[in-house]
Image 1 (cartoon, rainbow, N blue to C red):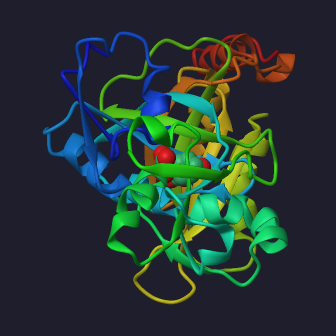
Image 2 (cartoon, rainbow, N blue to C red; image 1 turned 180 degrees about the vertical axis):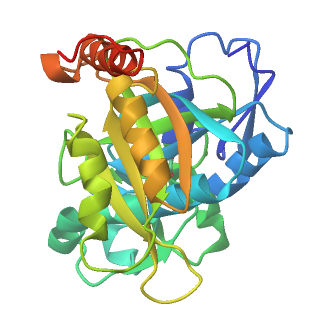
Image 3 (cartoon, helix red, strand yellow; image 1 turned 180 degrees about the horizontal axis):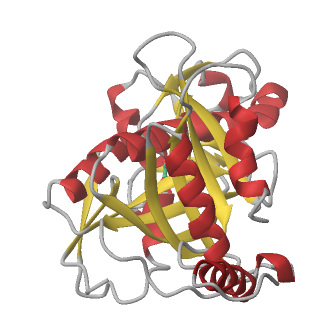
Length: 312
Ligand SMILES: O=C(O)C(=O)C[C@]1(C(=O)O)C=C[C@@H](O)C=C1
């Protein structure tokens, strides 16, 4: 991708999403525009107001960020460029002078609330949750008085004045991480690295018995491992789901391309979200029979048969 002029991210300044942007090389001259939610960040890309967006997609404790999965499925003309992993932990903050006993309502992003649920149950049981659009908004809006405290990022002091940290590192798992996607406009995927992922959104052709297995077989018979499969309601009526999937490998790997050919013949709707390097850099082990070479040899063999060559 060329150097982006503008990138959008879940704001305001200081979110974990902005921290993920720090991992993208070459953004020194790029304008970073904070927006209110993930759908807005992606729509700006699809409509050309921004060149790329950073969105949270999965948390190691809470699982998939469903709003982001739905927005990826619903926004046309976008393509994942890279993934990034950020350690996430949380502090309980409140306007200076607040005591733990004063707290009745706590503002928090739902993912943050879930990640601190053990600590909250132990230390502040029975407090109400006021959902916030981000970890920074939760703290920045404390002035309105609806909540007396917020779960926020450890760096919140840089962005919001007049707060006391009442407790820090209150996440239930000190090693929690969130995975983010850097998403641009549709274009040719980058070169394969041997440590890649391919993201897809797939609909089933019917709700006949066995169709889910048919879908999974497209990958299994080509030796393609899935690292994520999550069903999300399509939304037109009850019981209809689409599947958000991450497959190991790049669309330019023969086995992945072949699985996509199978999927396309089977499914009424396959959205290719991109092939991009894995954040952990872990190379994918491919058995010989699923290697590019093996697919090429098999194809040459069939071509030869058609051309009248011997049968083995
Ligand atoms: O980026 C932020 O700081 C956010 O508030 C968003 C978000 C999310 O959408 O999951 C990001 C990471 C944390 O896991 C919790 C919240």
